[in-house]
Length: 119
Image (cartoon, rainbow, N blue to C red):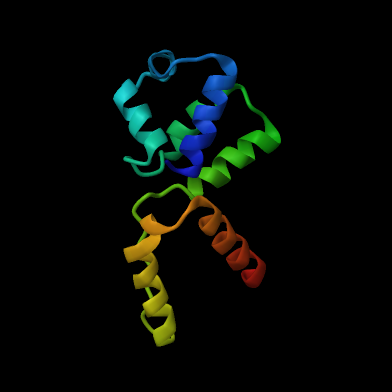
């Protein structure tokens, strides 16, 4: 599941909306929305994201959060380490190979450490 997919599900469940109801309102298939929630589809287009924002009737901070989450929700990431240190290439490859083995708390810790160091 992507960050956007998790937020969409949270908003749907909080409003008591089924996937089929939301899909019908957005004029897309429920299979598409399910794939979007589960990270089987890439991030939505700007137009689709605006439909989602409008559908949930979110404003300002929540709309910006959905936009930010959409930017972080591409399930097929490519990392170009050309020109970087060998350690960068090794890290990218190890992460690609082993990310599925990490526990959720490990992922949170890695993400926090990265955000702290990059700021």
